[in-house]
Length: 200
Image (spheres, rainbow, N blue to C red):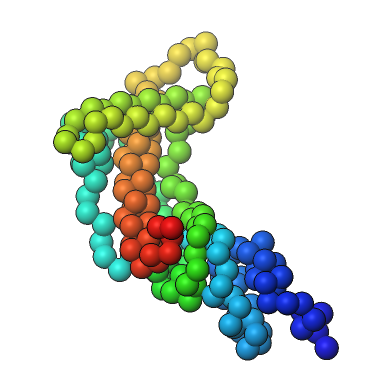
């Protein structure tokens, strides 16, 4: 007799809630008929995504469009100093449709979603702050990023190439951060739309 066989269903569901990880819970559901019936009752979930594929392509965010238009004049300047881009290594990660993974769960009340971080990072010691106020629905947008709390300045100062490279990295990071925010909003809109119990 398995230890879990002697536990009442509410206790097992409580334990599953403590596990939380969606992929782990889906594996647990294949262990037995009882687990298969109890896993969908989990209320607190953590969804960790390596790659994200949504059933619909998210519309361009007005925020990201704004920064793209602002940063467009810099592209010609960047090309004078920038080095050839390094090839991006391919991975074996398979894309995941979040709504498909969550379709097995019908009592979701708390959902944490962890999305992959971007590959562009500000150089060490860099600080970024953008602020925008425009549009009918978006009145304020603030993006703040710090790579390090302290910095050691070079006695020779930075060259023009280093300055432009750093500026390019900061602009790219800002655009990617805004696009990631737009993707998260679109992703969660899809999930909430399909799980009405999250409204309660």
